[in-house]
Image (cartoon, rainbow, N blue to C red):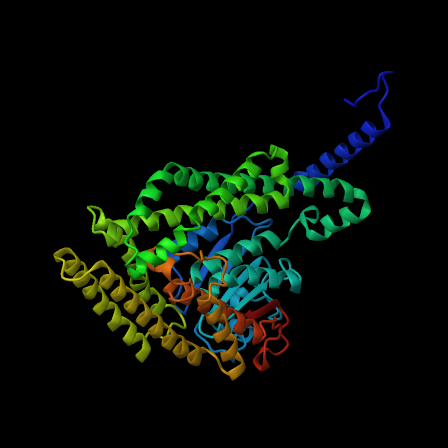
Amino acid sequence: MKPVNHRGGATPADSGAWRRRTWLLLLLALLLGGGQAALALPPTDVVVEDRAGVLDRNTLVPAITAIEFYEPTKVAVYTYNGSVADNLNEEVLRFARAEHPDWISPDGQKWADGLFIFALDPVGRHVGTYMGEDRKVSLEERDEIQNAAKDLLRDAQWTDGTIAGVRRGAELINQPWYRSAAFVITAWVTGATAALGAAALLILRAVTRAASRKELERGDRSYTSVSTELDVTELNAGTIPEASSYGSSVLEKHRTFLNRYNAATELSNRVHALAPKALGRRSNLRLAREYADAAAELDALDDVIADSNALLNRSSTWPTAWDRQLAPFRSDLAGLEQLLSKRHGQGDSATAAALRSFRDQSLQEIERWTAQLTDGAISPETALDRLRDARTHLSTLLKNHADTVIDGFAKTEREAKLMRREMQNAQDGLDHRRPSYEPSILGTVYPSYYFFSVPAFNSGLNTGVGSVSTARGGGGTTGYGSSGGSFSGSGSSSSF
């Protein structure tokens, strides 16, 4: 019902708002299901020709079978081990002519009707998409399909990348007009701009509000933990031996603890004073995140203060505190094999052998240090020194192996420089997806970039390979090469 004024008629302002809401509801009904709903059809057939041997059929086939297309569509997946110089389009056509003539139209000039081919060359780093004339999409949409798979493919997740590409293909092939991006853009231009803008604003605020609440909850968990243990933290700090080099460094951090706690309290008061609606503003999301980060770092620091007191004074809980100091190093050692076995990991190199040897030796050393600590043969400071030296040695070995990986993947000095930069950014903590603060005694005493960790190496390698692949020109290739003849089926490939 329309809103009315005191005389029974709609007020101008309320009438305009009512019309905008009506526009919004009508447009959303059309976008989300207006008109005749598109059919949701599973593939008519799924054919997998995994000549590269990189796909998990038990995962791939059920996943593709569950994907819904707008029209009855046969899905074919083809993989082979080629080279960087190969034309994947030409190879897919060659294979189809030799092994699957049913993939080609009766006149031999197009791909068969009702067909969607997803092709992958994991060695040459190419991905391609091909369609029958009744299933073809634009070149830009073919790029979208391929791009949907590339992040996973760059990380050698061949099965998941293939599934992601086929899923995006299903979303775009024979897409109804009212679900297309072109229609949405037209709707904005032709009068629905205000309605969609209001909807976008509402959605953005809702998403921001949810993110703010999540940050607020994260901050409250840490802040409550710090507040509850505040007296204990002060007692722990009061008995840390200042004569210890590690103890004095941790105490230096503690001297600013109360000031930082007061600052976190002020942030907490500001965030909790916000009305629920105000949490939907981006500026307040930043405030909530600042509060959560500040509280989380304090929470980590009070654990380090407790561990320093327990370990350096060899109290009854020192074994647990020592285990927490070893945890980052153990994690690095455990992650080495996965790093070396991944694509471009150069697992057969001399630097890889050095890393494996160091891992095996270090696992024995950890047991020896712990036993010596237990017997009193070495002091806690000596144990921490040995742990620091071991992690420093691992950092050196990882840097050496980074040179091996770069030499193996980069083809030019420009590419090598690009990869070195990404590796350095990862070591320096410029990858914001990873926490920059390590909640340990060594992580508190030394800056975040002091040790080169396995997660940082993996991050730098993935980013470096992706950057070089992009720089090499991952643009689409549409021709079928010299052997293609007059074949002109819809399809293209690109590198990743």
